[in-house]
Length: 466
Image (cartoon, rainbow, N blue to C red; front, side, top):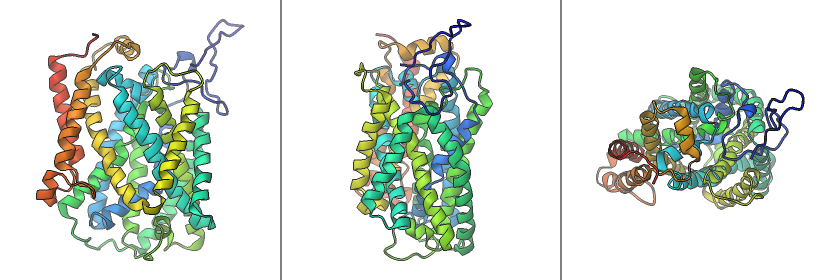
């Protein structure tokens, strides 16, 4: 836990971590003391923009055209709509960081209770620290392989080493890294976008994806953007309580929306350009670019993946710390980053041979659990809008606080939506099996069912202490 020593001259509390950059963060999931609060909402702009200016975002647009059969303009509409909704909730959830000074998965205790929250926190730790870490590491490894000729496995190991180091150092270093990565990434991808649109066939009609393809692309884009929602206050919890509320909403939402929508639309345009049959995903994206720009894009893909995984491995570790268990002192947040990174590296290694199919399935599965989780969390946030902050803060640290209705609503939302509406290569639910035009509306159904059920249950049986 962060300690705050007294200043010998004034007797005021002096920060032990404060705004130091080259210092290993010692805080875990506990509330950040007032003396440690620093920064401004503006930093949330690049912190949420940089991690999305990368190849995983490009691939959202690629799969919308190549896998889901949409035209460029249909794909663009699905991407923009899905991203906008995910970015909006990112901004709203970020508000609780300055209010309570805790990570997003700790805020989840209000919706699921202290013990019930372990399940969604574990799911987020797995998705962030293993799933997303693997996805982004693979794209960076392919980029390094294409750029240097180094074999995929050693390329992967070099990339994950950098990602783990950034997450290990912690919060302040992550913010600064994203700040300086942002202009380089934005410039390179915008240049690549200019060349891509010059060669793209934007008028192509797609391969008949229809409304089903549109809903699949919408779910993928929404799942990608909203996939960051369970991390929201992880990066706003050090802000002072007095941080401007409007800016705390707008900056993360804007950073997330612009980066995801612009880069994914570039990806959709690139999918209309014919590429060599056996090209790796990264080589296919850069194949039409002039040599100098192609090399810069490959470097940017590596930098973007590192930017994204610095957040993923950091938040994965924070999610585990949010279990609220009495872990041994040596199993600190920084050590959990290493553990999470090693597990993510193993998953990345296993998916090197079929990265495209693995990523398509992963994007949709994220939305399957995030949508019901978000439905419960947003309803709880609305219902407690008039509850004093002191009362809410006490619930966050009260181990006896329970709210099993939230966990029930989450699980029922998943249990209803996935068997009926999922549309995966390995499993097709009842509705798309009989009416393929529905595509995959699992996230929409999961969100609505969990939100409505939780609102009804919570109204009749408020969260309470046993």
